[in-house]
Length: 314
Image (cartoon, rainbow, N blue to C red; front, top):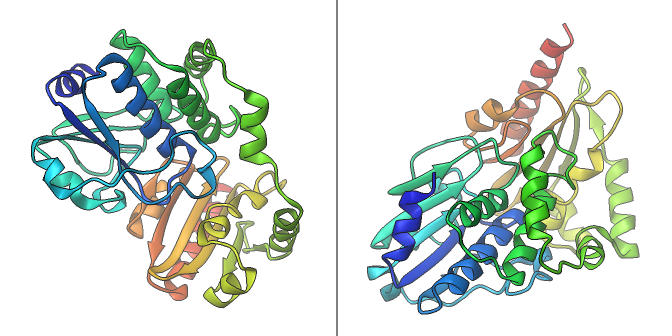
């Protein structure tokens, strides 16, 4: 499956790794993990990571992005990780590279690169990168193993989501042959300070329900500014407060930002991806999103989700 990408890596001295904007643990984990796998097996190569800052995942080792001049792309291989669409890639210079590749586990949206590996049966892009290393007989150093394990944990919901398979655990077990401090990892991922706990409690109080039981939260720009926290903490961070509500199979978090309303959509049962795609987004069947221009459009999306929930109960 990985022959083409393996040969592309072998034939380029400079490799620049991209991923989607507003990175989660899987995007950063696959980026950091692949970087150190390449350097471990081809120490003479120059490998860079580019994109916007790591945000709440800055605790991950080597998560600071590189400053790369435009000229570096002229003879380079750009590899895009964990990204289904061109518009989602952080740093558009990937398209100017000498050669391009993509490794991704989202539902296929559009072709991006000359060398493509997209497999939705994997719980995470980190799982795919781990499979790449195993299939190609590559050494995986400790920092790569820890980064890849982190991405597998976050995108599988601590191995709870139904994307988790026997292969997930086999790959995780392989990574854990390296010394990974899981106690420290889970504390970094899931522990909250008192103010964050209080913030989550306020957002629990904001939860609304549609006629057919879709849970949702809407945050205006004024409310966001009053919270005194970064955008990502609310948009991606607060969608989780609606997990595990009995009787709720679909939930959505709408957050107004500088480029529109960011819509984070989640489902326990139905495939909600077509609704995200309808509004210019994408992702997974049960975890996806889109950015829409205004509140009116966001409420139309919520209505579409409500109709889907209603059809499921007929």
